[in-house]
Structure formats: C-alpha cells, structure tokens
Amino acid sequence: MGAGEFYLEYGNFDYKVTVPYDHIVVGSGKLMNPKEVLSKELQNRYEKAQASDETVYLISPEEIKNTELTRPKQDGTVTWHFQIENSRDVAFATSRAFIWDAAKINLPSGKTALAQSVYPKESDGVGAWTRSTEYSKASIEHYSEMWYEFPYASATNVEADIGGMEYPGLNFCSYNSKGAGLWGVTDHEFGHNWFPMIVGSNERRYAWMDEGFNTFINHYSSNAFNNGEFPSNLNETRRYLNYFTNEAREGIDTYPDVSNVGNLGMIAYNKPGMGLLMLREYILGPERFDNAFKSYINTWAYKHPLPQDFFNHIENVAGENLSWFWQGWFYGTGNIDLGINGVIPYAGNYVAVLSNKGEIPMPVLIEITFENGTTERQMLPVEIWQRGDTWNHLIKTTKVIKGVTIDPDKILPDINLGNDHWPQALYQN
Image (cartoon, rainbow, N blue to C red):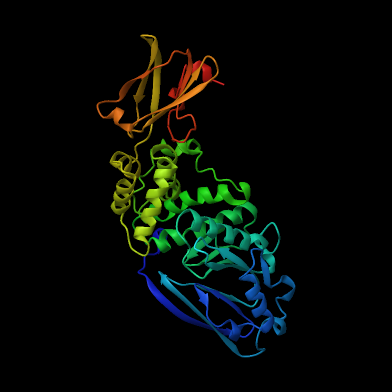
C-alpha cells in the first residue's frame, strides 16, 4: 500500500497451490509434499541440495522442457502444499520456465534450511542468476550468525519484472540484475526477514525501522561476503552532505506516504542506516551496540515495537542515556558540525579549543599527531556540550603536537569539513 508497503499480524499458514502439471511452484515456508509434486529424480536432487554447501541444479537450463524427467505426471494438475509458522504473510511463484537450483543453509543452532532460486534462461549466467543461491545462502547465514537465527524452512529468490520486493522467506528480484546489483538486491530483500518479518515494526508509519535497520545490517553482510567482493559504502557518510544541507530535506520521522518522493531514499533507508552505523562505530562501540541490538531483536521478535520501544531498549541494555541522539538524528532536520578552533600551548601541555556549531551534539573523537610521527586518540563524551557550544580540552603530553583531527575515520556526516583539522594548512592537500 504505497511507500509504507504493509503491516500485518503474525499467524501460521497452511496453504496449497494447484497448477498445471508442468509448472514448478516455490513458496514461503516448507514444501510438505515433495513426493507428490516432484519426480523420483527431482526428489533425489532435492535431498542432495538439502545436504550440499554447493549449489545443486534441480532443473538445469537444458531440462526446463523435459517434464518426463522432472514431473511426476504428464497431464492434468498438481497441488503443491506449504506451511510456515510465525509469519506475517506468504507469497509464491509458479512457472513452467523455471531453472531451479538450491543449497543448504547452515544455522548457528546446528539446524539447516534451504536456499533456492528460480529464474528463466534469460537470467542465466555466472555473472547473473547462476550465483543467486550462493548469494542467498551467504546472506541468511550471515544475519543468522550476527543477529538472530533465521526461523523459516526455506529462503527463496525469484526472478521477476520488478526491482525487488520481500515476503517471509521469499523475494522477488529483478530478472536482469547481475553482479553487484544482484548481490545487493538479494541481500537487501533477505535482510527484510529480520526487519520487519521477525521484528514486526509498522512500515506504514515508521519505514525507517524497516528499511533503515535493514540498510544497516546490509552494510556488514556486504563487507563480509566473499572477502568484500561487493563492499558497502554506507560508512562513507560525507558523500551525502548535499542532502543534509538541502532546504527540501525532511526528518526520518516523516511518514512514508507523506514524504517527498525524492527524500524517501534518505529518510527511510540511508539516514537511519547511518544513525545505527554511528551508534555502533562511533558512540557505543561494536561490543556494547551488538549486545543491545541483539537483545532488542530477541525481545521484540514476533511482536510490534514502536520507536520508543527501540530507543528505550538500546539505552537500557547499553547503559547510557542517548536521548540527545534519538532526538537529534531521528526527529527533525538538524545537522552535525564539530570544529576545532585552535590548539594552544598551556603550562607545558596543550589546550584544544573545540566547538559544536551544529544542531546535533556528538562525542568528540580526536586524533593527535605528534612531531615524532606517532599518533594518539582521545574520546570526549557528549556531555562536554551540556553547558554550551565550546569546550577547552587539556591534552597532557611532553611531546610536540603537529596536528589534531576530529573524527579521523570520517564516520560522522559532518557538514563542514573545513574545521575538522588543526592546523588547516597541514590538511589542505
């Protein structure tokens, strides 16, 4: 239903799809009657795929029309039976023109699931859909290991004449996607099994708890896949500064059906994704964030959290008041602008004069470069801004300071790059 897509209650689904005898059907959940709908040869291949880490053809490109090899009967109709539990919805796909391949998904508990792909000859090829099941398997295994175990019996990628759309355990992705594009859409749509399929946030109102959280977890899965074959650029936050300084920008809290179409990609996907990235990589650190985020998923699995439930849970588990961050980043259109006004010798040490010129305060990570070539990092808490927008930080050292940089890893989308260094002349190139 529009930009907000859909919002449903959880239930258990038992459904059957009756199709012509030469059709293949894939659907959300577990196939309950493989012996009734698959030939003996296909049953053997189906069992082989469920035990194989390598992709196994169930129906190869050359076998699409060979119904005598792959179908149990040669006329009439066949009924395919599926079941899935704790699901918001189901989807299925059927065609007589499917190539069908599959492989085993290994889950942290020791359980397994089935990754499978169906696509036509037009989508075949090692640079295209022939790698779909490889991508699907890697995506599900990564999210299961890092955040919460995949709960469904199968993860199915279906080619379609759309960009990409997610349902529990089944995606529709573009038939002409290839390479990095196919990895990206496959990984993104499977990521939706965690948000909003497992954690049932309300997409109709809070698209950022669906698309934004998914964009965030996609960042890590992309960097992890095949030693970074298709790396993410979500951490390159400063490439989006034109948006953050655009007068037409809107806040993350804008309802998706109300937002300007040109802003939806930022307020639903990228800006909330960057917010979680900053929280993990800059504010809390990976250990504290991961502990809190996994606890949030586990606590709210198959329930319906609101934004304040997320905010409160992260604060409670991480043990820190983050109200300044929630209010600044997720509500309104304020920006980050930390600056260093100068570094002054003082009583045998140095004082760094810092400023907060933006609307959103932040902790300040500084990297100090000494004349001997060594460096040191110091993190100042966000509380330095409680009494004003300037802060004098005493750097105790016996070494000569050559330069100081704010946010050396460039995690923050700071809208003014010119005041992040001292002396500025040192960093002009």
